[in-house]
Image (tube, rainbow, N blue to C red; front, side, top):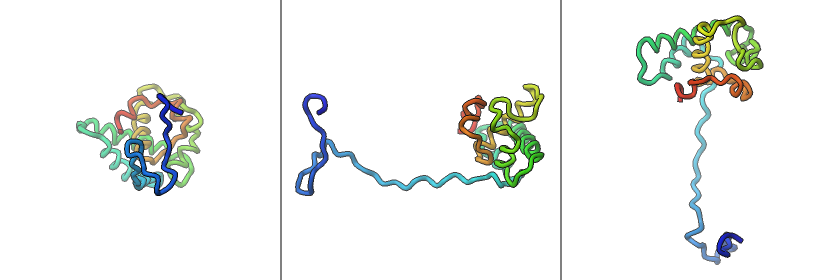
Length: 146
C-alpha cells in the first residue's frame, strides 16, 4: 500500500485495461559499442590520438601533450610485455597507487608522466585498477579528457 491508500499494480491479463497514468513507456535501445582497446597500439598512433583529445588547445599545449605521452610510453617500454597494459602491470605501478612510476622523481619530472598517463587512460591503452584510480587521484585528468 502506498501513500493515500493507492496500490500500484500491473494489469493481470489482456482483458484488464491498463491504467494509462501509471504505465511507463519501455524503450529498447542497443548498447553502445565498447570503446576500442588500444593496449596494442603503436607509439605514433597513441601520440596522434592523444592530440585529438584536446579541445581548443594551443600549439604549446599540444606539444606538451605529445611529449608527455612519448615520455610515459618510453618508460613503459623498459618493461617486458606484449602490450601497454601488460607493461603497466609488470612495472608494479598498478599496485603502488599514488607512488606509481619511476622511483625518485621530483614533482616537476612526475608531471609530464602524469599528463601522459591521463591521456593513455582516456584512450584505453592503459586500464588501471579501480583501487589504483581511487588512490592515485589524477586530479584534472577527468576534466581534461571528458
